[in-house]
Amino acid sequence: MNFLTSEYLALLKEDGELDTLLIDILNSKGIIPISKPQKGRQYGVDIAAIGKDKDDVEKLFLITVKQGNISRSIWDSGQNSVRQSLNEIRETYINISLTARQKKLPKIIIIATNGVLEQTIQTSWAQYTEKHQEKGIEFDFWGIDDIARMVSDNLLSERLFDSQRRLLLKKTLAFLELKDYDLNHFKKLIDLILEKPIKTKKPLLKRLKLVQICLDIVFKWAEDNGYLKSAIKAADKTILKSFEWLNSQGHFKKKYVNIEFYNIHSLRRKIGIAYFNKVSDHYFVEHSLQRYSKNQIEYGLTVWEEIGVLANIGLTEIRHYQYHFDSRAPKNATIFEEAAMTISEALVSLIDTNPPSHYPLYDDHIIDIEPAMRFLFLTGKKEEGIKWLRTLIVGIHDAKVLKDFFPLFRTHYENLVDYYLGNKKQDEKSSMLLTLLADWCVILNSSKAYEDLKNVLKLFDEKLNLQIWFPKSETEQFYLDTGYSRQSGKVKHSILLYDSIDDYKKEVIEEVELFSAEKDFSSIKIGYDYIFTITSHYHRGLPFPFFWRRFLQVGEDMYRDQ
Image (cartoon, rainbow, N blue to C red; front, top):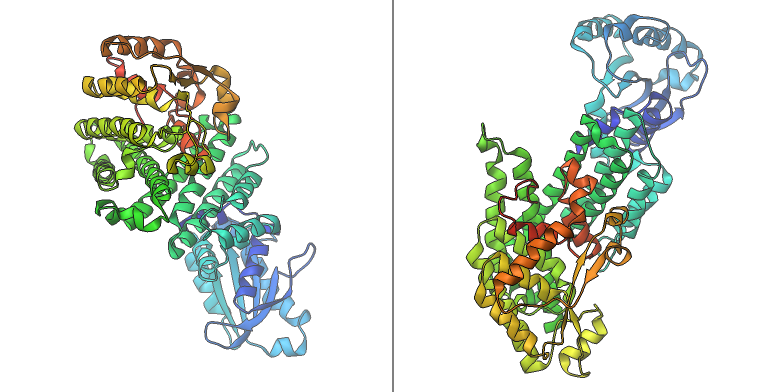
């Protein structure tokens, strides 16, 4: 946190930003400002304050505020130099600007800057303070690391924001513990920070640093209070909005922007790993998630949510592996490879130890199944993937035969309860889930699973309408927002499962060539196609078919997987 704060502080202006933060720091320490920054002659003092110092002695703090590093030229060049300011404080301000009581107080003259005291000037500073040290007057230097530490120690991170942003952050933290909290205040906060286009480097960096600080505050708060899943959602919102804001302005052409965006992505990864480390033991215990559920339906929904979360954490590790892999130094990426394999094993165990993972409740569980299947495939767990695939298909078949239940095409909790308990007769006519499972039968080359799937269709007298959603070129305008798969794209319906799995495979390969508009989205050209996985999971939008169907294309290596 101090590192992020330091980076943000380095971008603050001297007037109206850094000096305002210093006043907040003083107030938090019980040191009361008696004069605040103003334009015009101040005889070297930007802030004067009275309060107890670290030695518990009441003192008069006389602070001169500077921006950036204190170099030789800043130290002793011109009427606004540091030396000149110090001289004016000693020789003029103390003599003419203080009351009799204030003059009697011990005084500490401070240089405060969002930079450092450069090595070339440290001797001059030491000589000056030694020469002018006298009874009742001492000197101190507050550099960027000192100020960042004060911000952190005094829980002042929120003071980096204006009043509107501060209020939104406070509301976010206050409601974070609520299970169904949708983080609407945090969403407004991030949208507000990234509201207006910015062209120049320094203001742009300030916004990106501020976004990171917001997310880091939510992360630390969630970690300390046990709400890390909320921090995962906050991280997804942050990455989606940051990407959209930067990409819409063409900023990814700039190296420093890519570095900052990577830092946001890394913080998102850190949150995911923290969550995994906290809950991973539960994935290896039989029926472990049942204890967090009121009934069997809630148990099922909890399991599917966890599968989606875990798959996304794992795919993030694969993304970082790709970022860091270098054939000349492969060990650089080893930590991410090992983490991905550990998470993959946990996902397999979660599926094996929690039976609801065999019985989808909603058709839109494809949003969770798709990244999970893809993650298992990428980590080499083909046999485990086939086992789960067949178990899913058999589970869907048996639920229909035994309970006349089939995954709801429209997500609706009250209807789910009625259908699941048999209070209402179900009449599902469509499914996108079965199309996804058919695709994975082909990808995993499992003829047995394909035959099992055809048996499910026979239960509907071959009248179940299999569908799949494809994005169109105009989907790029919507795909980072809620409802993108409803606002745009096209649906292919009346899909047939041919007698031969090879015939179905041939048709899918042809469709990859015809209906993969997402290949031309700018995010792929930038090299961040993982954004498609994040937006699907965060917005509960339909997944993009190219990212699993491409596994069928022989020699397809143009787009590295996420």
